[in-house]
Image (cartoon, rainbow, N blue to C red; front, side):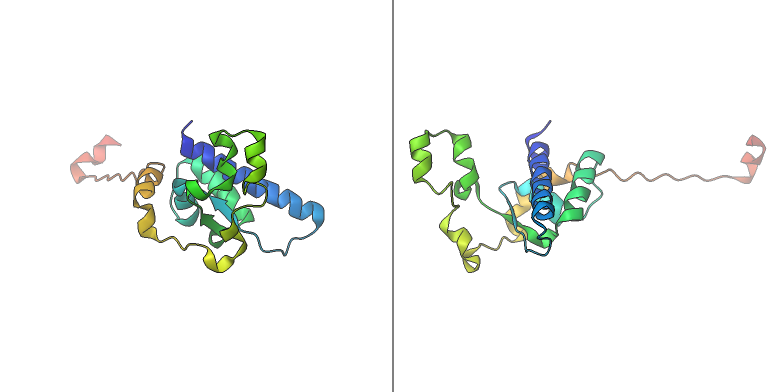
Length: 148
């Protein structure tokens, strides 16, 4: 399985977790924001397309519980969730922003607005999961009528 597909699964798990928490706490009307450091996943979520079955089914689930506008990109170097996966000891972890998130996350006006041009490289990878369009053409001549 490819890394973008694994990251897509993480996005699905994230939306399931949010739905579970909202249901358990009965807070369905609270505004929710989702963050990913995967440009490919963000392209799949934000762009409509005829994706291959695996991607299509997961994007459909993500769209059923979240809006395209709720999804944002966080560069990997600013992603507090990645600190542990890069390797660090517990003492270092306590001194980092892993527990509360980065400072910029607390101020919505400081969120970076990503443009489609920022995702050109990811869009190429994302389109590899599009279903191919197949076109067929059939024509019959009068001389072929005895064929049937």
